[in-house]
Image (cartoon, rainbow, N blue to C red; front, top):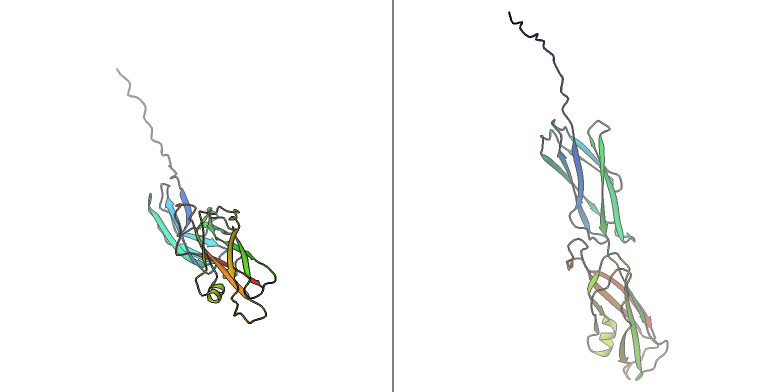
Amino acid sequence: KPVDPAQDDATVNLELRGGWTFTKKANNVVARPGDTVTYTFTVKNTGETVLPSVTVSDTTIGKTVVIAGPIAIGASATGTTTYVIPANYTGTNFVNTATACVTGTADCKTDTEKVYVPKVQLDKSGPAVASPGDKVTYKFVVKNIGETDLTNIVIVDSTLSTLLGKEVKITVPGTLKPGQSSAVIEYEATIPTTFKEKSFKNIAIVTATPVNPETGQPEPNKPVTDDDDHTI
């Protein structure tokens, strides 16, 4: 007679895998001192269980954001905050790191974002002495002292324009790469014979458009400037 096979029951407890990712993104990677940057924090639940809330701390900008839970499996949730680049900021980039932790735990992740702060420098020179009626030569050099390309570079000297009765506007051709200087640009002007003052001080201003390193497109709404003066 056949024998029935033996049977037994066993219970296996399956542990669901948890997992999540964290990213931080600025709304624009080009900002000047005084500009507002909006940061978006994104948490994605890549695990097999519902994710509770996540607390994001960014000590560099002094902000804390709570991304509310529960975050469903496969879903993402976001939080935002803003920061104004200080008006007196002298750096050429602004880097900050955010730390995100599942609220109340040591399960943490970090992400870092870099914002470029474009800068331009103008050097202007000319003769030390001149008399009414003399022809003088001013020399201009523009240097890109930031970390973004600069384009649409224009030098304007309104004081000299007033003296000469015509607009003094000089266009610097091409694009300046970070650390690159323009060729020396010369501008000749004749001091009017009617000039009666003992000295003449004029100020030139350069304006340039930064190029977004990520998109390769100019940022015309974020021009950067510098000025330099010369006295005869």
